[in-house]
Length: 112
Length: 113
Image 1: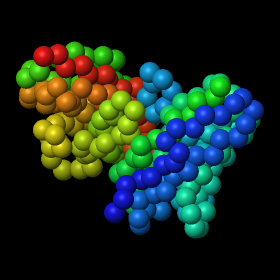
Image 2: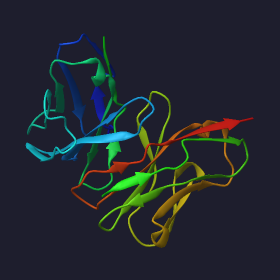
Image 3: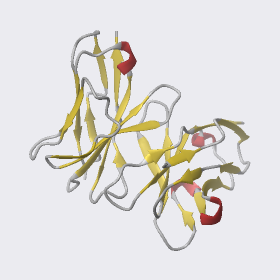
């Protein structure tokens, strides 16, 4: 059973472009979480999804950020019109039941 | 409000010495507690977790943690640190199901020979 797979591992975008981060949960896991880690900081919750549903998006910025977890395929975190402040490591975690979470290796986004 | 506090931003210990990393939490329901370790440029690996039962839990790599409800603490310990333990350690709290996990800001561990 492969772990949580995130791609790309590193992503460079110019200001104003779109960033799409993908997360394939572990097999059998229907709960997905996205977290953002800024330099020298802990992980900040962004959004919690189950298949085709957003359960909690209280940590998502109101603009430019969106997330989905379709019935088929990976979960996608989308950032439109990126700015330098979006540069961070974005971690995805999955869980079979909303309890213990297994984390991916993260996507490191750099906005230039 | 839900929160996790890791009071020590950075700790330096000698190889072979004992280690204790502090974690205090504030959570409105029955807490489920976790310790994760993150090596540079890597994801988070679960060291151990506490859901219920025995308040002293054993984890991987020789780590253990003790849940103290009266002190709202879940401190991580290791009797003898190895150089490979140098990493960032995160404490987290969550509900059993269906809720986000709250993370502390982390403690960076340096191990000196």
